[in-house]
Image (cartoon, rainbow, N blue to C red; front, side, top):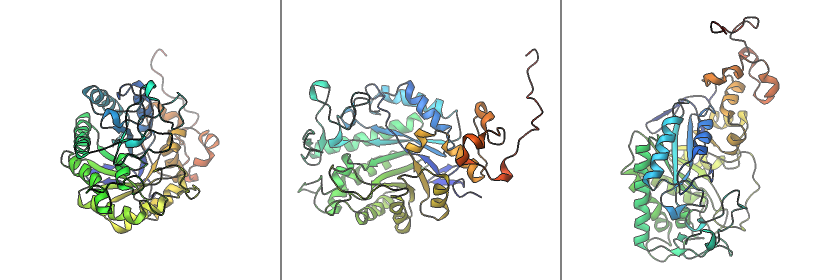
Length: 394
């Protein structure tokens, strides 16, 4: 039996397998509101064979968006569009649907695609706004210097996370994940490279974790216990003076005490110019393994996980509880279905696509040799000479 296709559980949420589609920004919203593209994108991924799909990083206030095209969940219009998307997407499969809540902090107000997007700051005369951060330190020398948050501003954002979580619940999402990595606001507070405060919100690790934990507690207070609640953690800044894996383990233990169900262990992106180890397949999986060894939280592994046998091995060897894929799913939105074929697992197919199920289509092994099923599994459901029944008069 395939470990990757064994049943999974996150908190009170039952999942059909251990495959997760990571959040991926689409830069296609208008005033934070989801557009038809978002339903096409998410609907496609709901038919990927994954047990869980997580909606892209979604801002909790307008100035928390990374770009003018980023998704939001801070207005009634935002909420209505997402509720409609969730209702339609859930008709497509048994996959569960989550959402990631974020505030991009000092990395806000950047260019969007296709407008010369290269992670560059948006000029003020093109619609940019003033970013906020724990300290007035720009992401890079050409980026805006952010406004330093006072406690009033911090409280506003903490409440915004809670309000957005309420909206996500009403919209019908099964899971909420807080984005605390990749150089965004919560990560800005936790990293000593971007947090130079001298008050109770900076300095020691305990103080630097304070803002993140206040956000977590505010969301925990309003998010239903029967739904799943998680956090994307930055495992390391890849810098000797930055946030470290040891810090991440301490933080994960605090998340467990606060009532979270899972963590996603990512890394990097706190600042440009930091030397990081060369990326390699599964290079961030050990971060998830560290959390499994030190906490009772479910751990999701990320980072160049793309081969079926690789994903199977991660779960089978208990290196992580789930594998979360991003670009491999964009590249192949049937990744989970093909993985099931390769690993000999039985999986539901969209009825409209039944013609390309491996045991219905002998051409499958020629088009997808990497997903060639075990020989014993490659059988036709019917004799090849028997035609499909046709409606009368056809």
